[in-house]
Image (cartoon, rainbow over all chains, first blue to last red; front, side, top):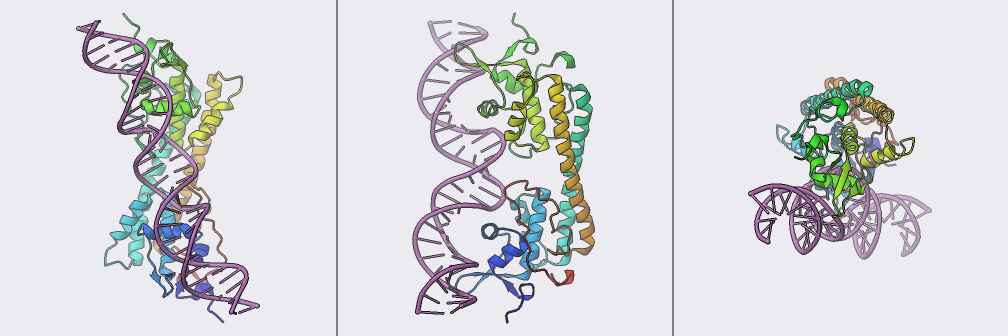
Length: 159
Length: 159
DNA sequence: TCTTTACCTCAACCAAAATTCAGGTTCTAC
DNA sequence: GTAGAACCTGAATTTTGGTTGAGGTAAAGA
């Protein structure tokens, strides 16, 4: 009888997909992007070391934090001591990403506070409403507003 | 002498762009998506009511919260009392979006807590690590992991 | 009037993160 | 030994939120 999946030394791409919750096509994609690696069997099929499973987990976590794949890749590339990520390496990455996450949370909280302030006023004035006036150029996707208001409005009520 | 920009009844697209901080091309785009409207002059140029300025502001704010344009559009379409958004309408939307924002913040905070817990352990086990096991299927972009772990790993240390 | 700036449309393109599809190979099981 | 599942590659397609460019019209100022 064959060893149970959790005990195999190597995993097929399908097993990786099932166990990581990531589609096979995504695993192919990650490999093309250099995020994970595999050896090939004589029949050209992928075989993954179990460690790759953890790596995929880390990738998904980083993505949830909002790190783009390219950054994840370069973070992984910059792992010290030649390519075999130790537990300390994971910790380093985790701490860095947690800090980024903290930043994101802070920005969103600021935004929410502005919302709360604004709801009573409802003005959304481009010149006096904190909500409309982006303190932070987060630029989550695409180049955001340029904020180049030249002529000011006379008052909040005018808007 | 012409009236100052802040006092005009209607704005050209360029004025809208300058005052809202959004590129002209983006305004065109929003209009194609049905997010804003304009009348046309005899020469086929856009003229916006001042209210559109506030609307653009609301769009940008909603985007910062993470609401996709399509949802913003449908929220605007569903405004009650026939298409002229009152201050109450804005408040309604603001409150809804603030709630969504709250949700997002909570999810991120949960994630950060998991990070903090995990950094000491560093395991990222797919079965026992809170970090790797996505509580929330946030699906921020693209269809996320399916989370369909069939065969369990025996222990955390095994991963 | 003439020049410059602003505006128009339509089409093509960009980036990220994948998915889907076509056409073919390899394993596994009965 | 053959069916069917799983795998392979490469190219095309998807979605979101726009930008860029070409080719042409409109309006404003000296």
